[in-house]
Image (cartoon, rainbow, N blue to C red; front, side):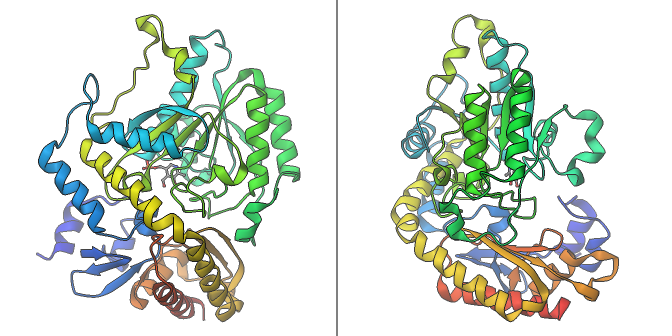
Length: 442
Ligand SMILES: Cc1ncc(COP(=O)(O)O)c(C=O)c1O
C-alpha cells in the first residue's frame, strides 16, 4: 500500500472533508528546508502560509535544529509542577524582556486554544476570589477566531465554527468589527477604525455591560481565520483603552500575529497598548514544536496569592516542555539577530509582490490588503465559481500544480510566508499565485 492509501485508511485529518480527499488526497511531504516543502515524489512547494502560520525562520533552520537536538540529549521532559529547567526560565525571561508592556509572569501551555483558555480562566478566577463575582461574562469581536476547544470556540465570533456547538458554549457579548478590505500596511501607523460606527457601538456595548464583563478577548489588527480581516490599529487601540478604563481585562490573542508577522515583534505595539493578558503560540517555538503561553501583566498574580483555595488549577501535561522551550529561546535570538533588522525591507518586498499579483489578476480580485508580512486578496470568481462552490479547494489544487502551498479562506487568498522569504522566493510565490488564479478563474 502507498503512504497515501495507508493514510486514508487510518488518519482523520483536521479541517478536511472526507470527500475532498477523493479529489485531492493528502500530499506526502518528505522534507522541508527554508521556505520550501519537498514532496515524496520530488516536487517543491513554496510554503506560502508558513504551514498554518507557524514557521518564522524557514524550515530546518540550523540554530533551531541544533537547540532541539542538544536539549533532547540533555533533558527531554520533566513536569513543570514542582520542577523547573533552564529553557523554560530562559524563555520566560526573554519574553518578559521584549513583551509589549510591563508583564511579570509567563504561564506555559501547549497550543493556542489552551493559552486562550488559561487566560479566560485566570481572568474569571481572579474576579471570583477578589470581590467581583458578578463579572463572569466575556466579550469578543464578531468574525473572530480563538481556537476550537470548547472554551476557545466559545469566544470565537464566526458562525461557521460555532453554530453546531452553540448549545455547549457560553453566552458571549459580541461586538461589531469594521473591516477595511483595502487596508495598506501604512494604515497600521494611523488611527484607522477608531472613529468607525462599529467602534462607537462596540464601546457603547462595553459600557452598558461593564459590570458583568470579566474580559474582552481580541485578535489585534488581523482576524486571521476571519478571512484576514483588518479592522484597523485605531479600532484595536480604542477598544483596549475603553475596556481597561471600565475595569474589563483585555486578553490579546497574538497567537497568529506576534513574532514579526505584522512588521513589529508584537501586533499590540502598533496600537501602543498593553493588554492585561497576551496569548502566544504558533511562532513561539519558531513554529517547529507545540508550545504556547500567556504573558501576565505585572501584579495580576497577586490575586492568586493567599489561601490554598486561591491556586490556579490549570495544567497540561507538556506545559513548558524543555525541548519546545529550547526551540523558543533559539527562535527569539534569531528574531532579534536575523529577522527584526531586515523586517521592514521584507514588508516592502511583500507590498511589491502583492501589487504585482493585483495588477496581473486585476479582473479576478475585488480588493487586496496588507499588514506587515500578511497579505490577502479577496477574489471575484464572477461566473467562474467552481462546481459546488469549492473555490478554495480548486485554488489549493492549482497552487500545488504551480508549485506553492496556498490555502484560501473561502474566497480570500492570502500569504503569510516565513519572515525569511527572499525577494526571489516572493517573486516565485507571486508567479505561482498568478498561475493558480488563471487556472481557476482566468
Ligand atoms: C488567532 C488564533 N487564536 C487561536 C488559535 C488556536 O490555536 P491552536 O490551533 O494552536 O489551538 C489560532 C489558530 O489558528 C489562531 O489563529
